[in-house]
Length: 110
Length: 114
Image 1 (cartoon, one colour):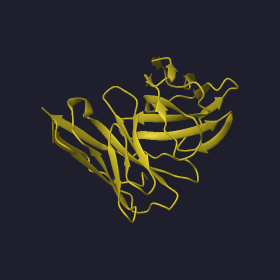
Image 2 (tube, one colour; image 1 turned 45 degrees about the horizontal axis):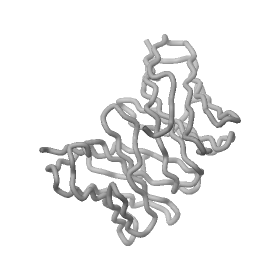
Image 3 (tube, chains in turn blue, red; image 1 turned 45 degrees about the vertical axis):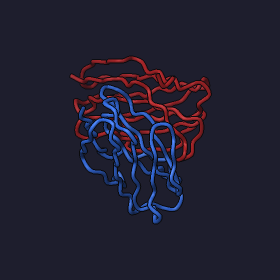
C-alpha cells in the first residue's frame, strides 16, 4: 500500500513546465509529502518536500492542496535531464515508513 | 555523488547462499535505510537504523537482517537466498529520523541469485 496515487506516465516538451500530480487522500495531519526522482541506472534522489505550505527550491516547486489530499510537483522548465521516474511519498510520522509507489515516468521530448 | 557508498556494486550467487551488503552513510548522518527494488515490486522499504538502534521496519523478510555498527556503517544480511531475491538493494542515509528528513541514496548493489 503506497498510500499515494500517481499517473503511470507523462510526456513533456523540453523547456516547457511540467505538472506532476499526486493524490494522497488518506494523509494524516502529521505526514509530510516528499518527492524523489530516479534517473536511469541511479538511486533515487531527493527533489522536494513539504507539510502544508507550498515550497520552492532550486529544482522544483511543490503545490499542496488546502485539504492536503493532493499535491503537484512543478518543474518550471523541463530539460532532457529531467527524464526520470518521479515518486510521491507520504512521510509517515509514526513509523517513518517511506512507501514508494510505482511513480510517474516522465518523458521529455526535444 | 550523494556521499553514500555501497559495496559491492554487483553480486552473483546461488540459491541457498548467504550474502552481506555494506553501506557507509554520508558523513554526519545517523540514520541508515535499506530498500529493495525489483522489477515487479518497485522500490520497497526494508528497515531503518538510527544511531545503532532499529527505528522502523518495513517489508523485510525473516531471512534478511541488518545492523548498524558504532562507526554508523550498516550491513544487510540476506540468507537462504531465493531466485526472487534478485534485485537492486539501495541504502540511504539521513541526518535525523523524522519524516521530514531528506534521504540520500547510494548507487545500489545489484544482487543476482542463480
